[in-house]
Structure formats: structure tokens, C-alpha cells
Image 1 (cartoon, rainbow, N blue to C red):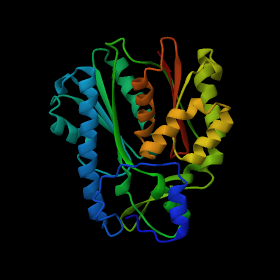
Image 2 (cartoon, rainbow, N blue to C red; image 1 turned 90 degrees about the horizontal axis):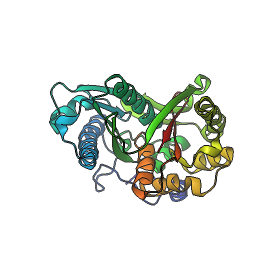
Image 3 (tube, one colour; image 1 turned 45 degrees about the vertical axis):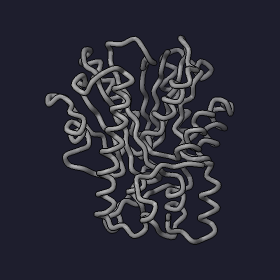
Image 4 (cartoon, rainbow, N blue to C red; image 1 turned 135 degrees about the vertical axis):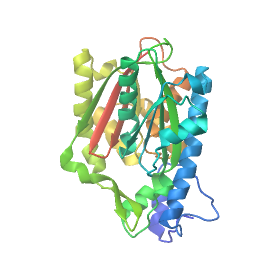
Length: 317
């Protein structure tokens, strides 16, 4: 279905530490013979569908209706729509016609965190508002096949998914956001992202990423924790985006954290693959659903993305 016949491809697919992935596509067709128009059509259909499903499940958990939402923010990097996804979801979900909205594009795997920060900013500016955030990617619609190792690895680990969360100053349940930090190493801007070739998105995934990540993560954590008078020992929940097996291994080594600290990230990678921007919210949801977080616990949401960027948020239960 993926279009590969070389033995090395099978080896990479089966050594990815991924057992399951969800793809918005017909397995009988595969992605190999799709035109750019086919890929765009599949992105739009899939993104609208699973973004709406994730948003509706989020509202149902919160006991809210569509008309209760005052602002909707959507991040996505695997396709382009105009009107944007947030505007389309106003119609699909029958949100208020006066709802505020916005789209963040091109932020890749780290996209959920800058979008979370924009939602946080809005909630602080308008304390009576309920802000809905949706991260959605159809990575399978950004499908490019050639003879390079980077596209092979990308096609082996990337998958489709959506996640949604609600931010508000009006409730006292769930974790509280304490702060954010963003850090960019612009000298490595060409290391990860997408480029356009023949009307298609082709993944850029430099083999140096596992080595670039640790020093950037070190710095972003220092800038996030030190102003709060905290150290890494004060963090109980490490909610780290699982960009891939090697990235997780290098992050664990650099942070000197245990297998237990990264068990959720590895479980999400194994069961869903790398969904790009929604993935870190899947990690957060796993912790919330498990009930493992207790009052007084602190957690770090952390993701890496194009830029080359490290994005982090500090949570307090």
C-alpha cells in the first residue's frame, strides 16, 4: 500500500516501535498513484471529519454545546484550505455566527503548543470566554515517495489524527497552565518541515534531528522552570511529543529521566504513530484519563517542530 519494494523499507517500518496507525484513506487504493488534487481532496475531507469528531467529543466531556464556544483555534500543517478549517468548523458544528476564530499553519509537530498559548492568551483577555483548540493532521495526504531515506522514515512513522481541548478561566477542574516558553534555533531551520515538489508536500526530516533536540530542550526547560523557582526534579509528568523512537531515546538520555517517565509517550507512538501536531495532546489525554495526576503535581508539555523549535508549557494540578 505504501509503494515500497526494497527490503530496507520493510526493516525501517518494522523497527519504528509503532504497532498501529490510523490513516484516512482506502487501503485498496493506497497513496502511490494519487494526484496532488486527490491528496488535497483527501486532506480536506479527512481533516474536517476528524477535527469535528475530536471537537464534539471534547465538548461532550465538558458538558457544553456548540453555542457555548466563544473562540475556536485550529492548527494544521498537512494541507491548506481557504476558508480555513476553523471557519469550516463553524458551519460543520453549528457554532455561533459571532464566534471568534483563527488558524495556525506550518508549525508541524510542535503546532499544538503555540496554538495552546494563543488560546491561553485569549482566555486571559476574555475571562468569560470558552476557547476551543483543535489540532488536526492528515499526514497521509502529504505523501511523497522517492529514493531518499528521509521520506522513507517519514512515511514509516507519520499518521493521521486530531485532538481537541477546552480552555477557560471559568472552571476549576483539570490542570492549570502556569507558563509557556518557545525557543528557536534558526541555524537549523532547514532540518525539518515540508517543501513543495511538483505540487506535492515532501517531508524534510534531517538525520541530525535526534542530536539537535537535546541541547534545545535543555535550554527551553531552563527558561521555563527557573523563573518559577523550579527544577526538573519538581516535574512528575513528562508529556513529551513522541517524534520517533530515536528522538525519544535521545531525549530520555539527555534529560536523565526513567522509562516510566516516558512510558505514555512511547505508548502513544506505539498505538498511533507520529500524528504531528495532535500527538502531544494524545499524551496529555492519556495522563488525564488514567487519573495518575494528583493535586499538587506538575507536568511539562514538550514538542519539537520546524523552525527548528522547542515548545514547552508548564502545567499544575
